[in-house]
Length: 145
Image (cartoon, rainbow, N blue to C red):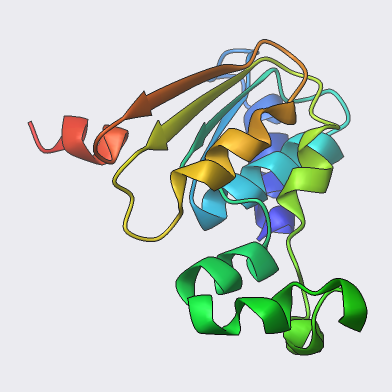
């Protein structure tokens, strides 16, 4: 997915019909893709918009399956006994601190999948962060008229 995003950025940068500014947008899993692509783009992305992003796949597994949380997060088992089941952990929280472009973050307080606390923890993005919290999925609601 990240390679596809980088290919899209490359296409836009080469295009003569599109402006010179590239801003990536990601929603939920797409937020992780957008953050990874921004960090990997080596200066070709000028901005980032994230909506309802999450901190990592193990954090999401623990949030969606509360009884199994100790098996995904445990100090005594090197991060939890079940972490080996997750091949790509999508450690977005660790990667977010490497974002070097202005970032707008949109968090829904009523998202049915991603807990708002995970978006709040992503506030470590160092450049121009603005976290907007609302009671519904923001862009989806705007699109519905």
